[in-house]
Length: 368
Ligand code: NAD
Image (cartoon, rainbow, N blue to C red; front, side, top):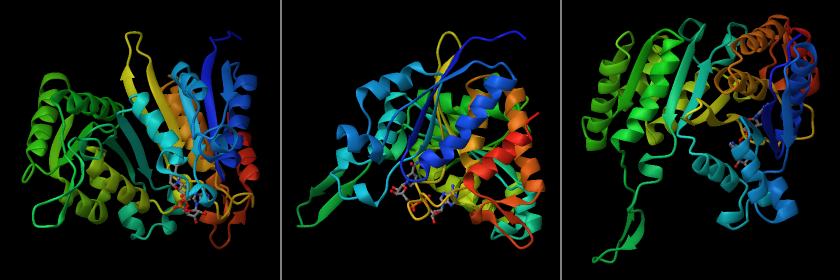
């Protein structure tokens, strides 16, 4: 068999259940190396509370440079009560913000897929969510969370004023719109762009720029504009009308959590954060489950590894150009769910409860 070149992957398991779920990804990487002669080269390091314990900071420069040099970063989760009282700059979550900001990961992809086997886990009626498959693209490095001026200042009448500034440049809008159109190209060729152009100038610019990108470069894609508040309602009323949703940082934060909950369980939701492509077509990227470090179940073997495994599948698809392998992994997850195996978080009557590592092993056993 022909050996392909080494693909560098940095594993940052982090805290709580992070190491437990990343262990299952390690086993899958090992399987691909052994059975498919893929040459993934993994390195593993500390992030979050685990890094703080050793180095007194949530991420060291050394780890940060390793992230810069790798083709994909797979992160477990960070945080936990042990570190809740640390000063802001030392808190585990700072590591995530630093990675996202410095790697310039401006596009956050959050699929919301309702697996047919788990349709009962959703709080919506089965007919509304069964077969749901939406991709939300959230702009991640601009908008109101980063805009200046910001702060809290005293005003003349003795009150205080809280200030945040919502700004977007054309360039910031265009690059994330292109990510959405490219994704739609490989899916159902439909993009819904959400903003509040009825009350915000930045929303007007957003709408105009997204439309321009479509008209100039993606004429085969259907584009709809929708006000973000209407999108919040439509996601509950008729979520299957959507294919790809693209929106800014603030609205994306809320809409992606809402869409995620349509699917029922945190333990199933992957995410990807992507940067710009360089001149060789390579981009910086980080993949992580949507859930946190779940300190309440850490060490109990109850963590569901599927969100992290599907995050690795997204890495195969978007960073490593291994679509076939990603399909193989996605299908393996489906087959295990078809067989009725469940971790505790998604357990229902008549299904068999398995541990974190049994779920990982079962998925590997279904890989082709
Ligand atoms: P959480 O996502 O860790 O847990 C919420 C609930 O979902 C818990 O009951 C947990 O047991 C359950 N859960 C989460 N993931 C699961 C999985 N894979 N399998 C089974 N059950 C799962 O959110 P939280 O409890 O609000 O936060 C815990 C810690 O995680 C905090 O320190 C928080 O800051 C941190 N956090 C980190 C990230 C991240 O690393 N990206 C994201 C969110 C929260």
